[in-house]
Amino acid sequence: MKYVLVTGGVVSGLGKGVTASSIGLILKACGLRVTSIKIDPYLNTDAGTMSPFEHGEVYVLDDGGEVDLDLGNYERFLDIKLTRDNNITTGKIYQASSVIDRERKGDYLGKTVQVVPHITDAIQEWIERVAAIPVDGKEGPPDVCVIELGGTIGMSEKYFLTCGSISSLPAIVGLKQALLLAGDIESMPFIEALGQFSYRVGAGNFCLIHVSLVPVLSVVGEQKTKPTQHSVRGLRSMGLMPNILACRSTTVLDENVMEKLSRFCHVPAENIITLYDVSNIWRVPLLLRDQKAHEAILKVLNLLGVAQKQPALGEWTSRAKLCDMLNEPVRIAMVGKYTGLSDSYLSVLKALLHASVACHRKLFIDWVPASDLEDATAEENPDGYKAAWSFLRGADAVLVPGGFGDRGVEGKIIAANYARQNKIPYLGICLGMQIAVIEFARSVLGMQDANSTEFDPYTQNPCVIFMPENKGSSSETNCFVNCDHIRYGDKSFIDERHRHRYEVNPDMVEQLENSGLCFTGKDESGQRMEIVELRNHPYFIGVQFHPEFKSRPGKPSALFLGLIAAACGQLDALLKKGTTKVYGLSNGTSPHRYGNTIKPVNGSFDGIYSNGNGLHA
Image 1 (tube, rainbow, N blue to C red):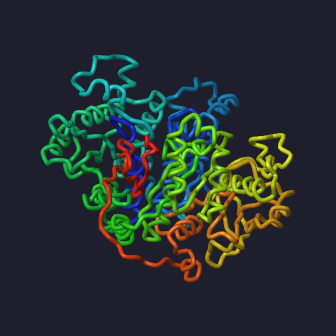
Image 2 (image 1 turned 135 degrees about the horizontal axis):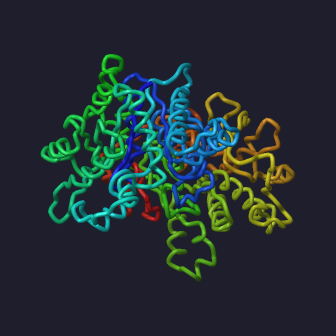
Image 3 (image 1 turned 180 degrees about the vertical axis):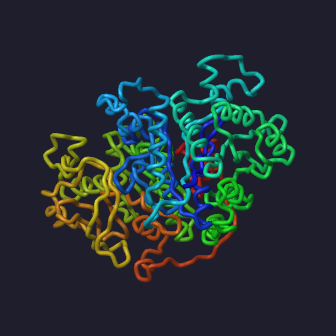
C-alpha cells in the first residue's frame, strides 16, 4: 500500500480538499486504484451535529455516515463510495477505537495509557485498516490512499494577519510556540502519529505534499516565500518532511521564487507545483498534470514503472473546456436558511453545476434567504424583502434544499406556492419536499393550519410527522418510482441517501392524492413517501432523499438534470431522447479562485455565478 499525505500551512481555506481530490484523480487516471481518508482533529465523533455555519454541509455516505464535506469532493472527483470510517476524528479515535474501553478491561496490562503510544498507535491502525477497504466496486485493496490532514501546520492565520511577516513575529516559547507550529492543539497527536507512520511504512511508500500560501503583496507586487518557509520549518520540526510543495498563489510562481523555496525548504525545484487561480474547479487536476505532479508523486512512491506515464484525462479536459465556453444562462433561486454560507449547500451547488453543464447552460445562483420572503420582513427590512422577491420572480427555477428548525419555514412555503401557481420548475429536497406537501394542503385542501409536527406539535392537520423508526441518516434501498418528469433509465426502483427524521404522514396520502398531488416514489412497504410530483405542472417535484450526494461530473442526478432541463426548455427532448440538445457555445467566464481564500461578489464559484449573498468562508 502506498500513502500520499496532504497537509496545509499558513492559513486555512487554501483548497487543500480540492488539491487532495485532484491528486487522487490524476493517480486514478494513471491506472491506479485510489481511496481517500480525511482526518478532522476536532473532538466530535462526526459532523452530524455541527452547524453548517461552522463547517459547511454535512455530507452523507452510502452507509449513512455523516461526514466532512471534503469526502464529497473525493467521491465526486474519483467516482467512488467511501464509508464513515474514511473520516477520522479525535472523538472516533477515543470512542470507536475503544482506547478507553480497552483500558477499563485491562488490555494494556496495567500500563499508563498515554497519547503516545496508545492514541498514536490507534490512529495508525485505523489508517491501515481503512486504506485496505476497496471503494471502487472491485475486489482487493486499493493501490494508493490519499490522506488529508485537516487544519494548518505552521504560522496560524491569526499571527499571519496581525503580524504581516515572519520577521515581525514576537519571540514565544513553550506551548505558544508549539501551537504556532502545529496550528491547532488537537492536531498534535495526529501529526505525531503520521510522523511515526511515515517512518514505519518507509520512504518509498509515503509521499507528503504540503499545500501552502505564497502571497503577493499589493504594495510591491512581489511573491513572498517567508510564510511557506516558516510553515515547512514547523512541519519538519514535528517529524514530517515534505516531498512536494503545492503553492497557492494568484499567478504562476516566478523562477527565482521556486529556486528560493527549493533552497530553504529542501524540496527539489521540479517538485514545487504552482496552484494558481483557474477558471473552474475541474481545471485543477489539469494544472497538476501539466506541471507533471503525477510523475513527482510516482517517483517518490516507486511507481514509475507500474502506473501509466500519462494520465488519461481526455473526458475531464473536455468537460473543463466546455464549462468555460458556456454562455447562455439559467437562473436558479436557492431558497434556504443558510444562504449566508455557500458551503452549507455545497453538494447541491455541485449537482446543479453537473446538470447545467450537461444542458450546456451557464449556471447562475440567486441566493434567497427564506425568511426574507415573509410578510414580517416587509416591515422590518423592506430592502431585503424587495430583493428576495426580485430574485424569486426573476428565476428560471426554484430549489428549496434540506434544513432543520422553524426559521424561514413560512418563507419556503411561500416560495413553493409561488412556483406551483406560476408554473415555475420546482425541486424540493428533504424539508423542501415536506414544504411542498404542507403548501398544497393549505392552498388546495384548505387546511390553513397544516404543518409538520416538527414546527407545530399541536397542529390539527399534521402533514409531516416524526417517524421514530427512522434514526436519521441512512441509505434506503428499493424506492419504487413511476414519475412523469424524471427518468432513471430502465430502473423501476432506486437507491438514494437520506438524512431526516420527519416524513409525510401516511394517513394523509390518500386525501392529498385525491386532490392531485401524486406520490410517485415510495419505499417497499408503501408507507414512506419518497417522491411527490404535480403532473399538471411543467416540473414540480419533491424528494425525501438527498439526490445531490450521488451526482457526479458527467453523470448528473436525474432530478437536477430534469430541473435544469425544465428551466431552459429542454425537458421534453430529455424525456423523449434521454439526452439534451447541444447548443452553440461561446467563450468567456470570470476568474475563479478554488480555495475559500477569495470569493468575488457577483462572481463565479466553481463555474457557478451568484448574486453574492452566499459568502464562501
